[in-house]
Image 1 (cartoon, rainbow, N blue to C red):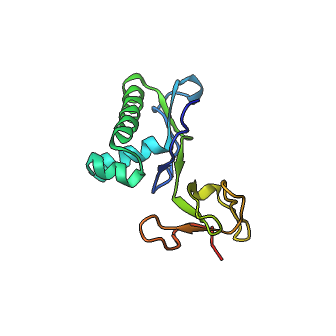
Image 2: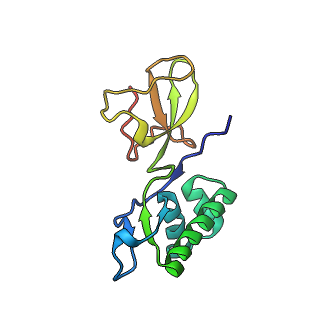
Image 3: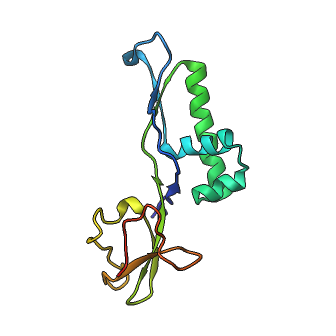
Length: 155
């Protein structure tokens, strides 16, 4: 069985999601799909001018994974520019924040995307180990509630 893809953290969601060469109808164009995390890799490396290690740390992936994401993105952008293809930005394995959840009953810890947590504060995530709904979201280093864009609150 293949290992599940690790979520890539992105700070900025794209405002513009489609680019195409001028004077060519969109229906006649081939299209490259740029994943949201690939766009984030280009933003961090080229616009923010961060080194590979800093970019990988911001996206919560290894340096090798960051480089692979970045190379895939550059290849798609180059193909679109050279061969006159449209670029559609969508999809991928990304999150705005990764929360570390802790079960207050058994102490089990696991990661979850903030987007997958309950949309309302009343909704709780169940512990995959013991099934308890007495869970809280913690900062990995400090052990405190994360507080950023997270809707998951412990009691």
